[in-house]
Image (cartoon, rainbow, N blue to C red; front, side):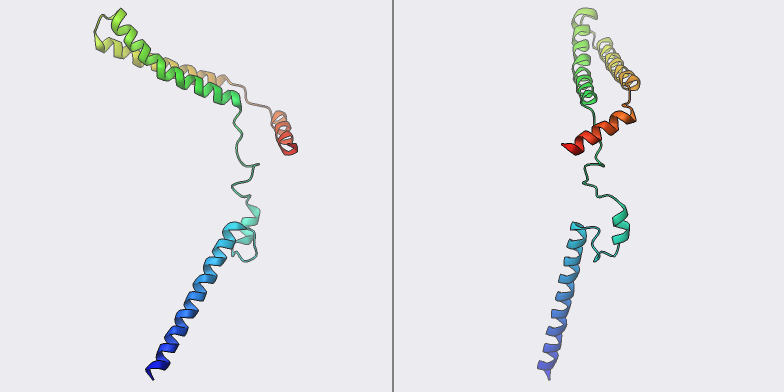
Length: 138
C-alpha cells in the first residue's frame, strides 16, 4: 500500500514539473514574440510597437550633443578658474568673495546654456521626414 501512495506522489510531482516547464516555455515565447498567439495579451501587444524598434528611438542631432558637451566642459572649468583667479588676483586671499565669484560664474554658464537651448531652432517636420526616409534606405 505505501508503494502505491509513493507512485501517486511521484506522478503528481512529475505533472507539477511538466506544468512548470510548459509555463516557463510559454513565458519565454511571449518575451521573444509579443504578438504570438500563445500570449494571452497578443492583441494588446500587436497594437503596441516593440521597444527596440528603430522608429521609436529618439534621434538626437549631433549639434545638440556638441553644445551639451561644450557647456558641460565650460561649467566644469569656468567656476574653478574664476575661483582661483579671484582668490589670487582680485581678493588677495579672501576665500568667501572668491567662492561667491565661482558660484556666480557657474550660474552665468548655466543661464547661457538655457538661453542657447531656448533659442535653438527645432527641425521642421519636413526635415524630420526626410531624415527618417534616408535612414530607412540606409
